[in-house]
Structure formats: C-alpha cells, structure tokens
Amino acid sequence: MLPQEAGQRAVYKHANCSADEWSTPDGRCLPMQCSPGKLLINSSCTSALEISELEYRLRLWLTFVKTPSTPVIAQYYPCHYLVQSANQKFRLWFDKFLATYTITTEVFDVAYGYQDTRKTDSFPCLIRVDARLKGTANVSRDEFESLVLDSWMNGQVTLEEGRQLNLTFQPSDATSRKDAFVSCYEMRKTRSDVNCEGYTECTDGYFSVINEGQLININNMLTCGHVTFNTSEYELNVLDDASPPDFTVTLDLNVTKVTLSEAQDLNYLLIEESGELKVCWEILEKKLKEIQDADKSVKEKSDVAIYAVSLACSVVSLVCLVFTIMTYLIHPILRTFAGKNNMMLSLSLLLAQTSLLAAVHIEYTGNVCTFLGMSTHFLWLWMFSWTFICSLDMFLVFTAKTRSSCCQDDYKSFIKRCLFSVSFPASVVSVVVAVTYNQTSGQDIGYGSMRCFLDSLLLTGVALGGPLFTIVLCNTAFFVTSVVKIHKVRQLKTSDLKKEEQSNLIVYVKLSAMTGIFWLLTTVAHVSQNSYFQFIVEPINGLQGVYIFMSYICNRRVLSLYFRKEEVKATKTNSMSLTSRDIEKQK
Image 1 (cartoon, helix red, strand yellow):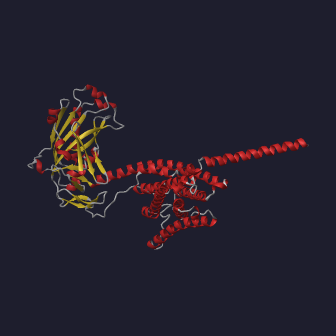
Image 2: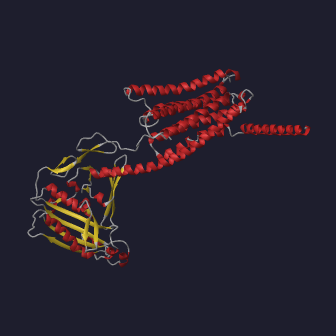
Image 3: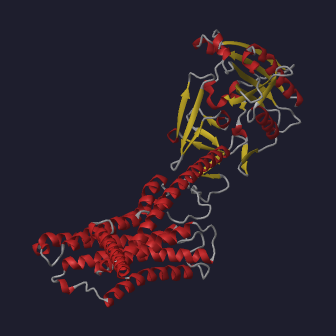
C-alpha cells in the first residue's frame, strides 16, 4: 500500500502528431483522410469546391428500438402499415429542401407464419430503404450531406402511426457492408419465415443518366476525417443469421482493442471491397474514452478492496509489533545481542508502517505531506537497514573462528549498529533531496508534490527499489555463505554455536527474505499498476509484524517467561496473604 498520486489513472500514450494525423494509444501517428473532393480542415472534411445538385445513394436498415414510452400494442402492429408511413416521412423531409428522389421502401415481417412471436416483447418489423437523391441548387454540398446524415443516419427515426403510437427505429448504414443489403426477393430465397411488402415513390420529372457506380454513397465518411486500417489490423465477425445481417469489428491498437458492435457506432465505419477498413476518428476517441472510464471504474473498485485488506493487515501487524516490543522491555533476559537486533527491527517496522498509514490518509499536499513523505522513505530504509544488520550479524557468528571474535554484546557495539542503521537511510534521503532540488532549480525536493511519498515512480524505483534490491542480494549472500559454512565445519554443532543461534539464522533469513522480496514485489506491482498482483502482494507485505511476532514471541521460551512471571506474582500474593493472616492471629 503506497501513497497514490491525486487523480491517478491509466492514460494512453499520445504522440505529437500533426493536424492531419491521428495519435494511436501506443503513440503512432496515422494519417487522416477524406472522401474524394473533400479537404481535411480542423479534423473535419470540407468540399474543395462549393458545388451542389450532386446525386447520391442512401441505403439504410431501420431496426425497431423499444423505449419506455412504447405501448404494448406496438408488438401487434401489422408490418405492412409501415410502408406508407415510412415513405411519407421521407417524402415530407426531402420536399422541404426541394430535393428530387426515387425511394424504395420495403418492410419485412421476420416472424411471418410464427404467431407465437407476436406474444413476446419482440417487434418483427424491419424496414429497408434504398433511395437515389439529387441535391438542390440552393443548398451547398456540405450542408445537404450533413442534413441527410443528421436526420437519417446519426439519430433515431420516429414513425408516427396515429395519435397514440410512435415507433422508434435505429438506422444502420447499409453501405458499411454492401453485401449485407439484401432485398426482399433475395431474403425470401433463404428464409421462408420472412414476408415483405415494398413501395417505390419518386418526384415528378426526376430522371438520371448516372449509373449506380457513379453515385455518391451517403455515409459519415463524407464529413469526418477517417483512419484507414488493413485487414491484419482488425477482425470482422459476421452474424449472417441475424435480421438484418449483423457484424462486429474489433480493432487491434496494440495496447488495447476497440470493438464496434452497436448500430450507431457501426455507422461511422466503412469496409471497402478491398478489405480496407475506414473509421471516423471521433468514434475511435469515443470508444477509447469508454475503455479508459471502464478501466478506471474497475481500478477504483480494486483499489478499495486492496486498501481494505491492506489496512486490516497493517493494523494486525502494528498490534503484533507493539506486543513484541513490550515483551522485550518486560523481560530483560531477552535483550541479548540478537534480542536487541530483534527489538530494533520491530521498532523500525512499527514506525515505518505507522508513517505509511499516515501518508496514505493525507489527502492534500503541503509541508505536512512533504514531511510524511520524507519520514516514510527514511523509516522504511531504516527497517531495511536492520534486516541487513540482522543478517550480517548472524553471518559473522557462523563464519567467525571463535565465539569471542565477533558480535560482542556491549553498549558500544549496539551504538555502532544504531548509527549505521540511521546513516544509510539519511544518506539516501539527502541524495534525493539534493539531486531533485538541483534539477528543479529549487522548486522541488522530491517529496510531497504529487503524493505524500517520493514524487515519481522513477524516484521510487531508484531510491527505494534500488537499496532494497541491494540489501536482498546481500542478505542472500550472507545466507548462502552461512549455510555452506554450517555444512563444512562440523564443529558448528558443538557448544561454540548454540542451537538457539542456528535457529536464529533461519529466522533472520526468513525475515530478511520476506521483508526484502515482498517489498521488491510490492514496488514492481505499484510500478506495473497490475491490480491482481497488488491484491496478492500488498496484504502479505502488510503482515510483516505478524511474521516477527510468530518468529520471536510465539515460542516455548518466551511463553515460559510469561508463565514464570505469573507464578512468581501468584507466589508473592500468597506469601503476603499468609503474612497478613499470621499478624492477625498474633493480635
């Protein structure tokens, strides 16, 4: 559990791209393009020449959308009634702009012959629209295309079927996959459960000599800057059994994948016959933001879980550490050479975990936050120093030729160990402050600017992970050397090295490895921002005080000291009681 930066969240890497390029999440710059005859201006496509009266092709599927206001009677509404209302809506809209057109509307009843379907919440009616349009002289190309797209492509379409029945439909651009725009006649070849009815309407005097291939397809590629992807960069999943034939597109952007499956999103892409995929950059940004927001929500929930478990573990650890220190203070016999090391290790860990808990719960930056950041860093390095001292002392015990040649239990030796344990973290903290102060021209000292700890992940890795990694290596070297020495020198089994010291070696190694390795793993988990890894590592790391308590206090020797103390107290109480009775008898 390390202090977090304010507002910290996962962000994508954005490259410094030009105005006509789109920055991918992994930092690449992809060119944005426009349809023929259009120029990219401010990420939108504008006509190179202001022209009008162009001819277009509009192809849509209209799929029913159930809304809270949709009455139950809608599911029983006859599909063939929609033909006239759909054509009328198109006619009124295009007549308003004096546009000429030929519109063919087909309504499919996809539940034809299955009467039970009408008893469900489904709506079996599906509308297919195939229109040829010609713009007007009084409306520019860009304006006309935007009007058509906004009214018939990028928003829902409502058909009024009487006073109390309004049916809402979601339009789907059929040009995004031309092979899926099947007519009523073609669909009935493969599906016997489909019935359909069509109607064609055109304005008087509309006549066109332009063939189908020269018509401009009305889709969002006309107005948006789009990015092109080849077939290896996306996956197309076609659902041919759906009505209309449905599909999803999954884009592989290296650091994340974007899936387009909703009809309103699929209207912003186009799959060419060559297999190239064109996608409007706005929809890409929208989907990436949705992914980031979803990731942020998941991370916030996981952070709460990690925090709760880590806090509980830390509290238990602190209680165990307090009890451990009290045990050493109550029983002077435990304050041997190794016992003093144990007591200082417990004290340093107690202060380090307390400072860390305080730093985590400070929600603002300032002098208090800066002080907590420095003290937390210092205290954890102090604790690491004591794991090193413990491992070093046991290494000296097992490699010394005589018992008296090392590890003298005197006041001067203890003071030297304490001075070393303090000088190491003080040196590291001083270097961090001096280097950061120099690099920022006195604006920062490396603590408290972003959070109540080291300001950056780089500093955390160098000033915390570096010393920790070094200490773990040293502790491992001490352990290996001591074990080899034990096996080589049989005299270690004699009275020169007591059984207690051999047991202490194992305990020190366990503590040194656990505190070192788990903190290395915690640093890695924090840098990688892997929530699953953090959930496993951080709670275990928070129980370091429990490990010390179980290793040093939960043994027969310490328990016997407590029982003996109780026996002495009981004996004194009985003696005083007997004495008082004798005095009373003498009276």
